[in-house]
Image (cartoon, rainbow, N blue to C red; front, side, top):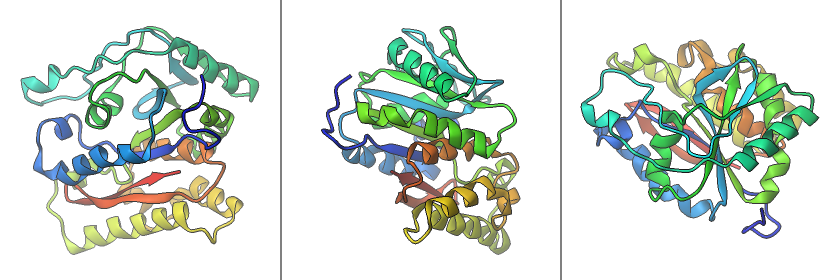
Length: 271
């Protein structure tokens, strides 16, 4: 693939993808997120392909979709019928999947290709807002069981050479993901917990005064952050950020979204 970005590295973006299909169903709690996703594409150039690291796929080893026409996985429950009729007929890209596989293996990371798995909502919900025409081919990269943060940073580092090839890497997760809190009315204490973790995460990702080693150590030891366990009772929605960080070679990110989704503070970062 030739780069449309000349000598620049292609972007790496971590986003909150919202609650299931709600961003595509007109939910008012997602208005800020929808506006952000629609507007951020102007900062992303014209990628020739997209690799999505979704919070909604975990495997024993790093696994990459390698089918030519992956189906959509409606991996959410209890929504109106239209949520299960959403279409996003984007094509896969087996050649890119193989390149990711080869880079992982060359860097000592066990990996597997999967030509049968489809695309889950961590991919098709945000991309249907960002790139509605579904003309940019995609692959999806899994998380790894155990959810070890250092492992996911290493995965990002292993494939970072692909940033020279005009591939957009999209970490699709959520900087706040406590399902019980989403359905519980806000109070001062919960808001303060949410905000304290967001402040820590923003500083860890964007503070230019942090050395690469300090930044990486913070993210590896993220459970020591203020109210980490409250904001992430389980860390699968945070770990796409760790892959993005690995792809960035520890460079500071730019905070591109600092708003509310479902009345909770959440962030997006661009490298």
